[in-house]
Every structure is written in C-alpha cells, then in structure tokens.
Image (cartoon, rainbow, N blue to C red; front, side):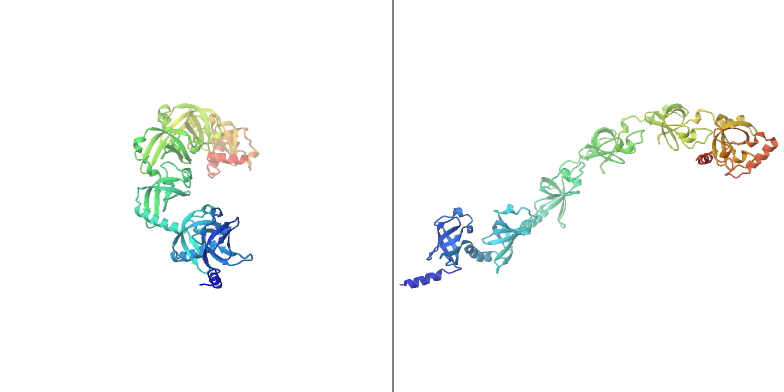
Length: 553
C-alpha cells in the first residue's frame, strides 16, 4: 500500500506545467471560470478563452493545459485555448501539409487580413480572400469557408491560408469544362462584370466573355451603359469561341430576329415611311425607321431648290420625319431616303413654264461677285450673269447697277435641268446698240457727254445709247498732262470728236483736243493712236474700270 507521502509525490508528477489534463467546471464567474483538475487547489481560466461564456455550466468537463501549478494566490493557472491548440496542432500537421485543404471559421479582422479558426488560429492575408479586391473584411467574420494551406511555420506555430487559390482552381476547372462544352449558338446565363466604351465583359460563371457594343442591339447604341449595368444578370448568345486563347465572343441582339432579313418587303423603293431623326452629320441625317433599321437622308435630298449647307440648319435630333425610300443595300445594311421626293420637282415643269425667250419679273434675292439671283417663284431662281446686265458697259460687280430687293425684268436665256440652273439676262430686253453703231456714230463726228470715270490713262465719257467712249490722256489737250484728274472731273460735260470705232472690241475712241481739228489733222491723230502700245491704247474696259477705281482712291 502507498504511503501518504508516496501518493502526494505520484500526484505531483502527474500535475506538471505544460501537461494537458481533464477538469470539471465548479464555478462560472463574469471574468473567469474555476475548474477542478483533482489537484490540491482549483484552477482558473480567463472567461475570454470561451467562445460564449453564457453557455458554460457547472459540471462541464473540459481539457485544459496547466500553465502554472501555483500563482501568488496559490491557485493553478489553466488555459483552455492552449490545450486545444496543442491537441489540434499535431492533428493539423498530420492531415494538412502545405497545399492541403481545410475548413475554418473566420474569427476576426486583423492587420493585413483575417484571423481564421481551423482548430488553431491561422492567418488569411487580404490578398488571398477572393479573386477580386475585398474592401469589407468584416463581412467575412463568422462565416465558414474552405481554405488552402499555403505555409506552415512549426517553430513559430503559425499557418498562412488562401481562399483565393481554391476559387481560382475551381474557376479554372469550370473554365475548362465551359470551353469544352460550349458551342456557337448556345444561350448562356451571365452577369455583367465590367463595362467599357467598346462593350461589356460578361461573367459566365467560370470564364469572361466579351459582348461588343455592335452586338448589343440591332438599333443604335451610343454607349453600353445605356442598356447594361454592372451586376445585371442577362442571357447571351455564344457567337465565337477561341479555345487556345480562351476567348468567347457574345451577342445580345442575336436573340431577336434580324430586322434586315426582309427589309425589301417592309420598305420597298418608292414607299413613304416615317421615322425619328437620331443623328445629324455634315452630309446628311440618320432616321430610325424601327429599332435596328436606320436610313440616311443625304443633304442633297432635303430640297429640290434650296441649297442646304448642313442638315442641322433645317432638322433636329428626335424630330419625327416623313421620307421616301430611294434605295436599299441589305448586305451593307443601308437605306437611302429622300424628303424632297414628297413634293413635285419644280424643275420638271421649268422648261414648260420658262422656255428661252420668256420675259420674267422678280425680286433680286442675292448678289454675288459674278451675278445676281432673281426669284422667279418659290424655290426657283434665275441667275443674271454680270456680263448679261448691259450691252455696252463693263460691269465689275452687279451691285454697281442692282441691289437686293429690286424688282427687275429679264429674259430667260437657257435652262439647265440637270444642274438646276436658269440663266436670264437684262440686256437682252433691248437691242444691242453696237449692232447699229454705224447709224449712231462715224469717225469725225462731234459728240457731247459727261465724264463717267477716270483712269490713269484717260477718261470715260458717257454718250447716247448707253455707250462709253474713251478719251486717252494724250487726247485731252495739246499740252502734256501728267494726271488726268488735274484737268477733268467726273460729271463734267465735254465735247469731243470721234477718232476711232472698233466694232470687234466694241470701243469708241474720243479726242477732246481734236474737237476743232481739220480733216488733215484728224487723219494724223488717228495714225498716232494706231501706233500706241497695247497697254496705252483703247484697253479692255475691265482693265480701264479697275484702273479708274484705283485713281479714285
């Protein structure tokens, strides 16, 4: 039989620091739990070592680790967590080497990641929580997941986990299966993962596919965000699969019938259609006839008569518009439309209403450097070229004799239906005075007129029948004249003698100094004029008028 001393010695050998023993809860306090382990004094465990102190009851049996056999108060210091850790550590090492998988419950958020209970506490870095960046770490606390063991440090007794690697592994397996099972034409469920300017990436639960903006709708899509949002669940059609590069092209509009399949039947050429203006460009307006079908009204098809610089001058986006179908190209998905075809073409009857020789009246609508436009009727103009204003006078700009708003009479000269032009003239209302010039003037005649313009080389004198004669600077006076403006003024009445008539160039040469010459003197003077250089002679009226303007300035 053991003596008391031997029994105490044997008991003290069983109760040593670092040992794990069974104990019974004998009292639960707010901050600690008293446990009887069969030693001479009770043991104490901190309350925070229990997951829920409220469920701990007197009589519960638990495994504890002896940290110290006696503290300052003579009590045994115990640890429930350290007992569990020591028991679990060896177990974890045997069942879960690096690369193994284990289940665990997220315990708390710590610096750089999460603390996970897998029997012992392990660390899950934030970068290894999921395949996407995780912002709300607290949302994982209390949840149980499977983890991959990526690192075990036995000396420090810590373990690093990864949930991301398991997700990626599972995703890769799903991706491989999807790529092998998927065929073009399949309809798959997916979630909008990301939206860009050119399309959207759709998560097909294992692989991402690209839904290009042109495959979202048969109609016009300005931006993918107009019809999709991130997180939205949609059904898409598989268009193409590249298994080597693991790329999948998706479509949304392909779930619906292509509106262009029977386009000729729906919109025959010549049919009147209605639509909404969806876009304006410098060369025309795009009109939506139905979702996915747009027609183009070219700027030249907006009006028969008005020259429209750009469609925005007469149309606006979202405006309802009626038009006529002019042409269809189903392969290129193009429809040509016209607005002016809704009205009769006034040029079709222009030849009938305004044959050459017809006298017309109208207001001057516009002046240009080359002529004036006269309005014959609404949308129909005739053009008076500057050369058709007067038979006798060289007019540089129509504003010299015409102004906007003037009502004038003219004669139709020519109709160019192809180019939509009507040429009219004012001078044709009267007979060309040069056709009867021999009856009006002869060399040697004395004439009277007023100075109309001055030039560096002479002066123009207005005669009867709206004919101008030119007095060369050498024919003003017997004395040498340096500047014509020193001896003559515009509006001054002068008497001169006709010394030359040139029918081919429609010119009359005058001489003021020869007004009192004899016949012999006239012949001599004419010979002198004929000997002058071309630039000093009876120059072209256009040059003369230009020079006259310079002299005025």
